[in-house]
Image 1 (tube, rainbow, N blue to C red):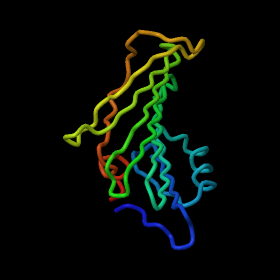
Image 2: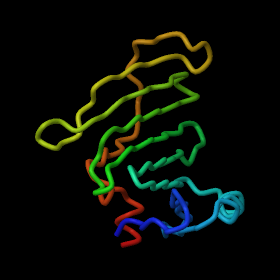
Image 3: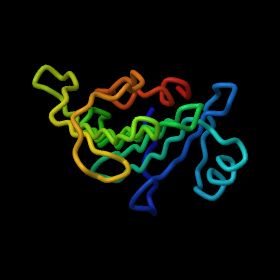
Image 4: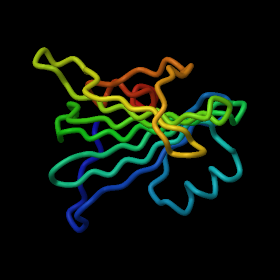
Length: 151
């Protein structure tokens, strides 16, 4: 179930983090979420911002080694279907920042519409294929791991 809008605010914001046991916790204010994140050092965090026009989700996943980080910035329609995903994967050991844009194709499946690689150190373009974790791309908000866990 999507978070409903309150009658007083123009946006409904919620934050989530996954603790080391794999359980997802929900927070209704950023201060409590930030404190919990500092204490628990989660590898996965999420922030959700729902307005009367759209839902944006920032899904942040880090490697246990601390060597890599992936940040997905999803834009969904109010019914939960994907409009666009901007994925940024950075790896210190590979000296790479990989940026991908995903949108739905006419069949309703996510398709990559652009991809670029650059050096984390210099910002100059690179043409190497980095080793990246296989993270799914959601065509609907309900497919995101934190949504499945809290339903």
